[in-house]
Structures are given as C-alpha cells and as structure tokens.
Length: 355
Image (cartoon, rainbow, N blue to C red):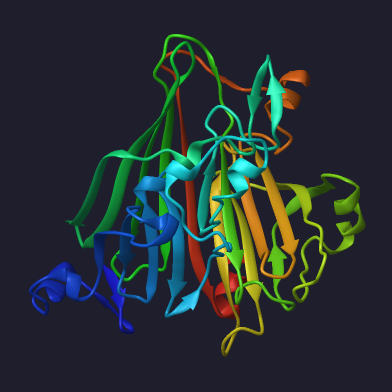
C-alpha cells in the first residue's frame, strides 16, 4: 500500500488513476551542467510525498540534495558538487576541495578518517570512495506487490596494480508515498590478498533542520570527545547554536544502543521548525557498524551536523593498526551494511521513535 494525499492506496487504485507513474513519483537520470559539476551523472528521485533526493553515480553513488515538501534536509558545502576528475588524494586538502557534503558521503573502503602513513603508504582524509564513479548503473521503477519501489543501483571499484581490488555494490531505494530512503551496500574483496576494511557513512544535515533549537536524540551509554576542543563542548554535545565566527569543529564518539532488531537510531529534531517541529531519523545495523561519530560544526557557512556510523573511529588506518583493531576482508569475503534515513514530522512522530 502507498500512503498518499491523506489515505492508503492499493496498486490497482493508483494504476487506474494515472497512465504513467512519473506523474506522481519518479527516478529520472540527468547530467549536471556547468563549472566543476559538468558531466556529473545524477538520478533525481521523488516519491510523491514531497520527499526527494539526488543520487550521484559519478560520485560513488552518494546522495547530494535532499528535501521534504521543498524544505532542505541535507547540507551542501561551498564547493558544490564537483566531478571526480578534480579529486587528488592529498592529505586533508584533497578530500575537502571536493567535499560537497550532501545527505550522504561515503568514506572508505580500505581507509577512512584522519590522514596517516600506514606501512609506508600515504593515505588521505576519508579515502577515495566518494570520488569513485559507478559502473553498471541501473534505475528501476517497479511494483513489488502493492508497493511501488524506486531504486538506483551501481558498482564502484577501488583497485590498484599490485594493490587492492575492493568492490562496493550499492542499492538506494524508496517507495511511492515514502518519506525515507534505504541504502543497502555490499563491500567485497575481489582480489587474492587480504585487505583492510574501513567504511563510514558521513551523513550531513544542515539548516533549517540544524539550528539553535535543534537537539540530538540518541540512546547512548557513553560519549567521548575526540580531542581537547571537543572536551570543551562535551556537556553540550547534543545541543547546537547560531552560526559562530571562528568555531572549531568538535567530534564525539558515541555508543548508541541497538533495538530488538539490531538497529541503532539517532534523531536530529528542531522543535521550532514548522507548526509542530521537524527532524531527521537515522537507523543502521549496529553489528556491522559498531562505531558512531558526531561531527558538530557550527561555523559560518560550515554550519552542519554529521551523524556517522562506521566500522571504526575516525582516527585513521595507521592508528587502527597500531591498536590491533584494524579489520580485514579476506579474499572473496564481503560485508553487508544497511542504513536508513527519513524525516520526522511533528512531536508525535518523534515520541514514537523515542518510545
């Protein structure tokens, strides 16, 4: 069943009313034009509920713009979307020069987090994942029983001669009338040598979801500051403020509790937004993504909160290896990940999520 326009609709009831479902909901392939975005392939998805988002196959199948009923959800940085040809894995700067943010930026696959030198190899901030173009891209729109599903699928490969051969297969889907998207990923070691696995979802939320009244709701047993700067803001890790000149980013490591289905949850909710408050909800599999990072950046133009489930902390690969905590994929081994992102409309919806 699809919930649209205040009621539930069966497949037959919808089909009798429209000749082509693109009248109501669609997944449309386009290409961006102009500046550094020239030629970037995009898929614009609309569900009919007012929920819309844009997938970028040219940029690792990440999600750029997202909105609900015309209201922005994610954060777009001042770089805007750039083509992957502009990327160079150069310390911190290489990643940041093309970090458009968006609703989803993927970090990995064999390293993410802080730049480091690991076994003689210089590794840049967050790895190349977001700049790997997809192949075998497929866009489908089909009925599955009484549910009309819009899906974008693609495959990215991080490979080097004498080095790794790691493949990410990603599917991003949403349903007719839905107010959320679901990411299903499989990271596979397609080579014949063991490879490190470091994978993180950099989920970025901006104004108007993020504002001075916004609160982070997460059931967690611990909150640890990354450094001295974060220690200064530890007591307010779940609260935010107006854009602040000279603000230095604060990063916190949280340990959200999993529910009976093995999912951990986090909600950003702004009670002052709209008639009854509005926010966003993130859910992910805690077993495969055991670490959760909050990126709190309250600067001018850099005004964003990142909710980041990952396989490890953002301290970089060399540190993970030093501590004996670096994960590996053996030849032919794969790991599956699931993340859902949706809107929270009103206080009743918030309370339902919080239980």
